[in-house]
Image (cartoon, rainbow, N blue to C red):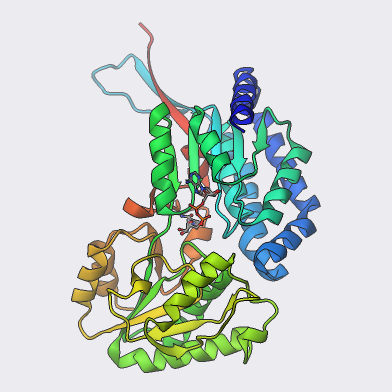
Length: 434
Ligand code: NAD
């Protein structure tokens, strides 16, 4: 395996050094090939997502394929402009000089992907790597084997190995790859493994982007439209059965609207998933028994306000809301990453905000209120990756909002133009004429 990793990096570096991938036409062709490949493999992608996570076709298409195609189209539309060197002003002290920033590819990039959106989170970064002119090796997650196989087949079908390659496997494969010298590493996964990746990258002084997780709060103030808040919270929390990095991890609601909000959430869950979610054939499954057992242990952490049932054979946990939680409960000690929503209430938001701000910086924060002073206060007081006001998740589907974490939820960002920038070195040149 070590040999395979070494060989792959050497082959790709040799190919990179031919300069072919630096040509913008080459990159555009590669992105068009990717688009055609995805269209050709569309049914296999949906089947793989169903096999690995029981994602319905609608969910698989909407939360994985459509997002990748959207990024591809946006990139194809703008790539020439992004890749053009940019002139910038020069100090008046040097009137004869001109200053230009040249974006150039790093070289050979490593993309390590997680299992929860196994298609989107492998191909999203790949679009940036290709757009910027790099070669790349993708290491998909071993926990979603059908999708991992499919990613490998698709890539082999459209690209030569010396340009883009997939190396499937478990931790040892990741470790073998991380021992090699890459020119850029783009990692999406847990905070713990993020530390391992950054240590390995430090050995070679390889720059990294770390897209990690964390506990993202959702805050509902008394003036919020509770029905709308419930709709958007249910969508954000129970998409992919809560196995979403930016899912609201826990809810913080003003005491006087708590009961009504829970009622609205209950109604919305019934509306969206049916009277008995356990019978819903399209509700995604928990990825494996280890995560199932980890999650079901949380079910006794508080008072069950909604849901609470599970089925180990089917790896199914129904949407669950837990009350009477305290900050020391096990469910509050790690990212939940499942369909369980603990709820806190407040009378005074300030101590709550202090508590949130004291904890590791979350990947996302969601705030439901029309009160603009309160919106400003929360944005000012709490540091987090990104988020929404009166909405959940949607900030990460915009081409215009760089997506990423801060502190323990990650470093660096991508999406839209930022995906091109993150895989580019910006070479600054000052040119004098005399
Ligand atoms: P993970 O960290 O366990 O695994 C991610 C990848 O790293 C996999 O390909 C895996 O094979 C590899 N890996 C695992 N252990 C390794 C090790 N010791 N050394 C080297 N490589 C190793 O994460 P996961 O369970 O696949 O994904 C869930 C986590 O990812 C959650 O924390 C979630 O919040 C986070 N996540 C973040 C984003 C984001 O965009 N910020 C998106 C999705 C998931």
